[in-house]
Image 1 (cartoon, chains in turn orange, red):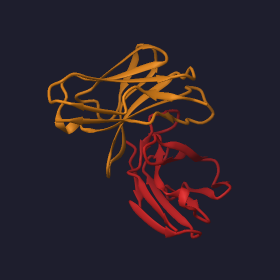
Image 2 (tube, helix red, strand yellow):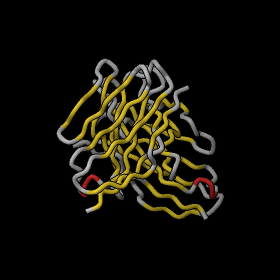
Image 3 (cartoon, rainbow over the protein chains, first blue to last red):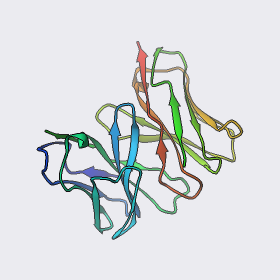
Length: 114
Length: 113
């Protein structure tokens, strides 16, 4: 089975702190994604990576950056956390040339910024 | 760009009844429409999808229908069971050949025993 692992299920940080959210997938997927999930807003794409060291902005990239130094690992970085970044963060991966574009999600990282 | 609207936001049904969730999309070039189910404490998981060259697809108790002219697609769950209780998301790509899906806002389905 495909496994997408997010290193932290729950984090509590203070305003202004630098936050790293780590995601690892074990299926050699080219594509990796970071989504933010908020009630009533669904899933919104923050950043997308289609290869090592390649990245594209999603719909809400402001306040975030990403790093993909290895194919299996995609990190989301909050340079200076703010309270409006309190949310559930979901990592996903997929094959670039799959017949379907099925996304495989991790279990999420719930971040609270105080 | 693509816009996906999903209704209703919450849905309660009696066990054994059917549930229907509807989504509309705006980009006529969109060609792939997945549905994801998110159980409590877990990430979303694909349950069924449909491509724009077919009008309906079934998998046991779940089905998806697509109306390209009206630009809407629906998830149908028959003979609902308590384990169907979850949040369901529809999605559509902005155009074809992209995996950067736009998700609907989600429907919380409660199946009452």
